[in-house]
Length: 317
Image 1 (cartoon, rainbow, N blue to C red):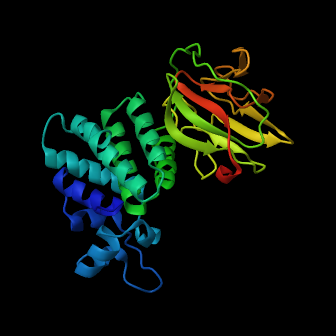
Image 2: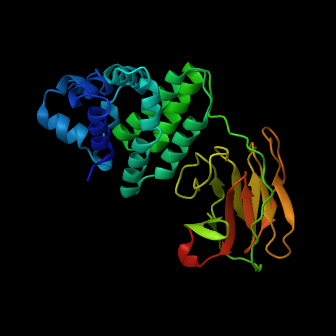
């Protein structure tokens, strides 16, 4: 079974024609650490390269071993394109790291109980974003892959890649804006909740585990790039990075928009009435929270639907 790191090195070798030593020489820092040799200077030590770098498990990762991912991702992308030696090389890189390699990396993250959804969401956002240069998209996809492989941390990978987009490309993870569909999911009977959770539904079919809502002051954030065990990122691509907050106040629960692009509506589980929690294009706008109850359906963007459920205390965050 691969680790995220060993899969990354294996893929760079099989797809990109880059050996483990060649990849490590770009990824590792050349600065000395605590008086010891720089990690880059130790790549000829077989045990060090194999055990501490290539085959490191997520719990064995040393973030301080790695250098500037902005630079290494550009260099490695260029080397892959050169090794492919095809006129359509950048297209192949995008197809690979936005497709099969991304799916495999996401599966490995989930195997190690890491946030595969966050990684998949970031990849989907890059794939869907229009860019003036095809090479830029290739670099971003490779950057996500490299950082996630090296650090086994998709949150840092997403933040670092976003920083590169904004600082180097003057571009951002813009939220896609498809036409807003009228919600058509019908919830069931209402009941006054004590503890609430959400479950993802698609055409009235359950397609997720139950996500208990946090009773902390911060509540639960739902968003494409929402991180943290109390938050939810099991959403479609038109959802904003931080789209909706759900929190408890006294004995009631409320949903409040966070300035999303594609908005949120609520279908009542009692009478099927529709309440706008936050309209589309709500950046820099503030709307009051809306009370939610067992049996309601939250409709985020065009296709993301969550059924609100009363849950057992055993599932409480």
